Length: 437
Image (cartoon, rainbow, N blue to C red):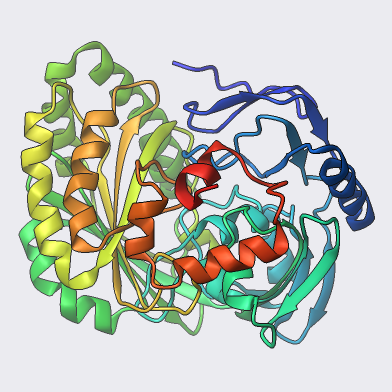
């Protein structure tokens, strides 16, 4: 298992959060201004070098692997402006800092994923999403971006630009994001309702539940028929916050400390994993509380893992879920993590997983350092024929030819790439795999 200690920022060695991607850059670039970013890109273009911008390392794919120059944007992390509900920040700002700043201005992101450690640039560029029928990826909240193109030019792209549907979610292929304008909403409180249920009961209520709840998701525990249903809905005021002790017990002790111990035990004695999963599923208790939206959406994740997540058309969810128990039972190893299922609505972002359709997202995980490839490949083989689209930041094995079939605007995106980075200053092996040369 990999160490939890990350290399220093300026080290040539880099490793992602999940511990499954590592690279050694020739140079590490740490610009503090947009002009410095532009100058470094111009120099790379003139000398035939390549630059890969890197966020917080929360992608499991090789999307942030730099085989030449690595650029870190942690110094570009400031607030630029607040204009009504439009908030412009530097792209290296982490989401947890963004959430804090928005709250100070009486604002919030309309939706978030379940962690807040990514940078703004990384979150929108990979298709980070939450749950909710009236929401899609975080990229759908973007009103404008400023990016540095392959020529080293700072280019502002807003809703009036024909480049906008591509630039909001560019998987690092179009340029280096330096500023992002987000369309935010007034701060709001969520009522969180979380309860264990039989999986078949959750599936029976899904259509109504998705339609009548602001945000709905569930976790299925492998080797069992049990799941945890999570529903978050807006309320006018906070009247029942989670006690400090219950918050510590659930989020720190059970979800991290105890779960880490259970995963370590399961690694040592794999035969115990089904029993551990059954005990964990039965030990779940219902809880209901209210809290500021971002504190409900985002939770601490300190047990390291690797992940594959597939978006599929929502009508195919039963078929994909039904395949999972058979896949898991046939594996030569045990699966130690629950399967996460979320739902979003359509958007018009060209490389968004949810482009043009109602989506179901299914995420499969495995403990960091444990075997996973047969599990993930088998699940991908189920999802791809259903029209599935892999999350750009989660492990998958697709190439440009297969992804072109999944994305109606794939070739339009490639045309924008040719326009903004014709010399491929920003490419790396992952982009060559998913977009071609």
